[in-house]
Length: 394
Image 1 (tube, helix red, strand yellow):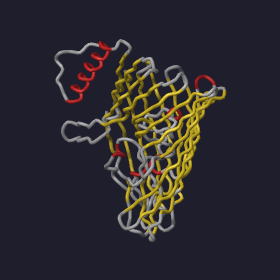
Image 2: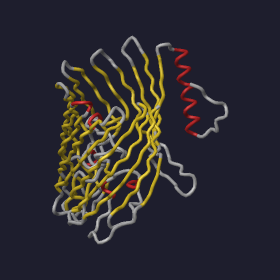
Image 3: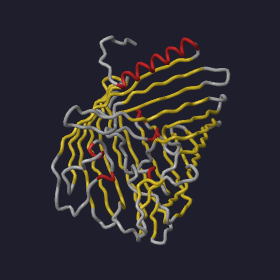
Image 4: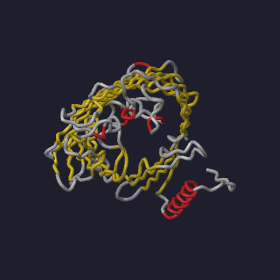
């Protein structure tokens, strides 16, 4: 690596160089330690049109967030809005140390998906994506501690998309702090974890309405098994969670659950089919928290909300460099009839893209997205989006 002496230092570059210096000193002291760094540059440009509104005016302008789609009677149609951003670019640092008691590795990663002021310098704030260590304590088991993808989420089942996520309306998608134990088996891997809890609840007559409650007295417990049968790789996971609140006057606690099954089927010529199906009190785990975990009734009790959702995606290779993915995602919530506010009943989205990679790590893509949201009242809204992307992984 070459570091030029004419760098104009800004905070993240200072941090970056300090990190390199720290790792280099470790290497000098411990020859069994290696490090690597890399990242991704992602530039997005999109044309978006919302029904019943000019634009979302929030994070939904950068990528698909189903709960931000405005709803109405369908009598109005917003203007076509053009937006660009590079905030999903990211950088990561990794280290690996061989010891007499097993290898220890680390991973720190950040992106810039935060506030953005388009009026002056388009400066976006960086945010933590991953920060975890892994200790391979035996040849067949390991312990992970830190923040990364939830054990409940099978990342490998996520299809290729131009949008930041893709099948947003029906996929599990979450990163959070956790402690995870993994054990390799003859035919797969078994995982157990406890992860950071967070609850969101509606008002069903009690006057309590919060999108984040931190009154849980124990973590979310998750068990997962990854297996393989021929060209089919699959993952199944189960979760138990405490859904509770205490507002000083009333309190209640219920035991919630979640189950999910997902997989990848590789077929002829590199094509594949990816899918996911999930059910339970999923709250923040599915569709970017388009639904909540429950509703607080007038008597202070929590009535749990069950969500069913999933997606299916087919990817076809036209050539070694050209491919397309067809994606459809859907989820629905069984909301209590006692809710005093109008809330999301269903969200869905479909997309079709074309991806071109002249080099292995260089990709250009175009994608059409149609997303819809329906409220319990029957009010609906949709988003039509044509999005372009350029990606370089280094």
